[in-house]
Image (cartoon, rainbow, N blue to C red; front, side):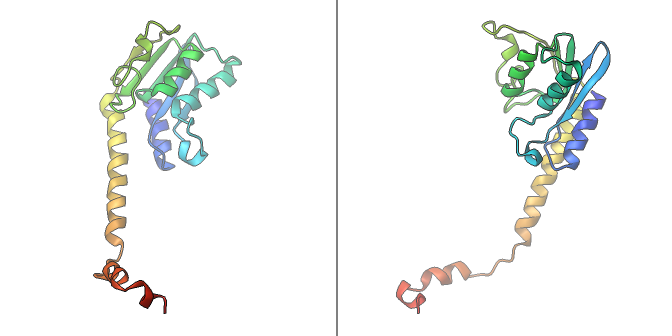
Length: 172
């Protein structure tokens, strides 16, 4: 999970939501990934997807049944689907995601009996560290947005003046 946190920090340095992922096979790191949907203009470029793609290339197979995925944030539905299709054996995540988590927070796709693959899921590993980097990121973004709003010059009456002039007078 420590390596996944390093990947999350790399995402944060690029202005992306700080989520990192690592694929391990036979106790060996096979691939890493971090969020990059904004910079890559790719809605599927979540950390898990990046790591799964890289692992499939390294191992020469899109099926990864002997692999484990470590990720700093509970996977979403999209990532859970890719994890299932890759046949990942075990998913280990740090922070729960109460808005989009697909390992029990919102839905639990890995417990859905109608689906054909059920990875073992372990949550809460290094939870405080994983949640902390996300909290810091979003806190800094809110502070920056607040600072930008406060830096905008406010001219009293400017909006009222434009709307108080009758249309016939404003066109002259």
